[in-house]
Length: 353
Image 1 (spheres, rainbow, N blue to C red):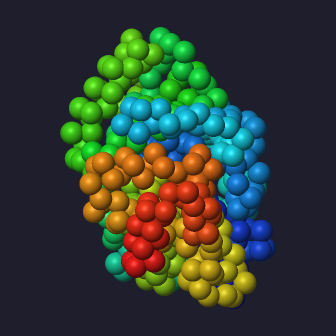
Image 2: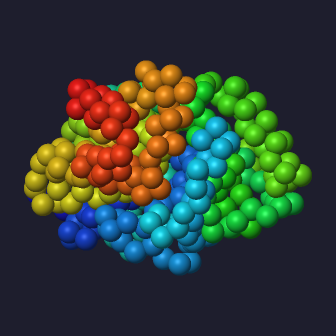
């Protein structure tokens, strides 16, 4: 057993792995190509769930989320609280905080060749054959969609800073979102359109919201999100975790929590001499990603009206369970017990896929 494990990438998956490896008494060494952590933009939301392996410190919390507003094609379905709580975090400070609790060495602007397995750390060349690969979406082999967002400041009307707002758009099979971000807000959209189209749709969305139309742009950000489901495996002997392995919930795009958990489980398995792929497959989260992916494939085949009817049918609790990956078939049955036709269609599609 080596006294150190190499980790490619200092994102949530890599940092989660470093935490587990350090906790087991080994030395994590992180190879990060960028000059800082948290380069990829995202919604920065982390739900409070029992499967996160460490406590989120208050110092990195920008906003506490207590409520969710849900819309479908601009029609408000509900505002609910009590079942989906979480935080908007400073992602960079969050990752740096986790690393501060490990014995990890981190090398910035370091290079790793995923084809040869060779890393350059300063002037030293190292053959990396065992550890964790958390290289992010560029190394993901499944389906990806674009996401664009603004951070807006200035005049923000009566935006509620303890609430996240989700606006499903059945045309693009995606959603707009309004998230608090400290004293500002993040407003974005992701879906099955190209980046340019999404920017136009987002500008239109903002111009039609009286709370946002007089705001000022603080930042303009774009990314892609890996929503094609799990792609477990190895790259040159390094076990894939995080977005490189598909640890993003396909229906919501949530990636910080799934990536951290996957990195932690794989890192813990390596440190204990266990099979990391087997341990990852056993995760409830892995099952949830697979179910969400099947649901997404089904939703692609539905008409716009059928998508709208399905989203409107589900209760707030069912929406929360699906969004968090706590979905169970028997609970869906309970949710739709008085809607037999819808229930039969849904269950037939899920079981048949």
